[in-house]
Image (cartoon, rainbow, N blue to C red; front, side):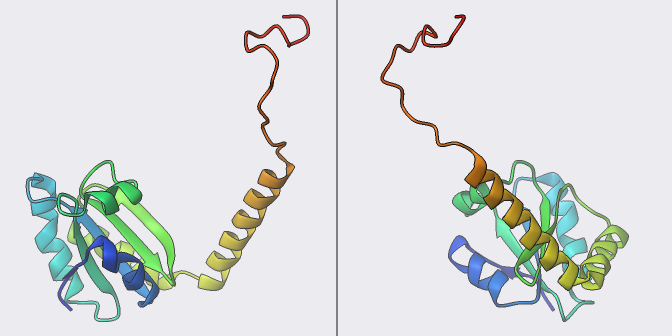
Length: 147
């Protein structure tokens, strides 16, 4: 399967509508991106069960910012709507094949359980953290005993 260019408007539906999605964040001016592009395309032809997508970070700056892209190329892999891999830097064909194979081999019951535990821990931590309230007293530290 050939690679598919996606935009910010298509990103969420692409992740939600496909089991395994790889996303290559790239730009035309990026030398390593140009080197990685043919490798990414060639590997995509071997895996019809994986959707290989590309995001042009110049044309999709907001999406790149929302995805936290600070270096390109960056490869992300999603499986069952979960980000399971994210790494900047160009990969060679063997490395990319290893990523694809590892994503396919994931025990997604275990991954979903881990995500649920992490979300529960974050919610519990947020619930136990006292709310910060605005003080009507002086803001120079004089309200702190011993200051």
